[in-house]
Amino acid sequence: TIGLYNFRPSVRPIPMEVHIAGFPGRHYCPRMASMNKPCYAAICEHSPNKPVIIFVASRRQTRLTAMDLINYAAGDENPRS
Image (spheres, rainbow, N blue to C red):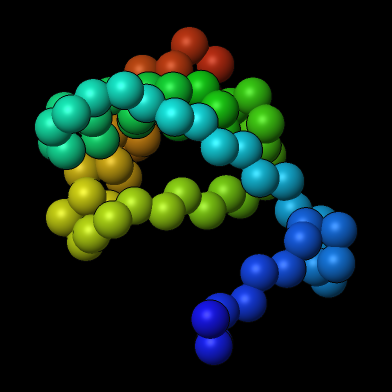
């Protein structure tokens, strides 16, 4: 397709790791909500001190995901400053 670029992580100017996880579920909202806790766990495991990018499908889902991640961080036993 024209206008679509896909660069391998090895050719990027800043190294990048890609982690992909699949989640079962037929209905959109419950499936999206079920992803937030594993997403937070993946952030803590793979990038505890560096920024991450999380892609979601809509502005509404961005707000919901951000609020859930903030709540998980606030309730974490080992919060980072």
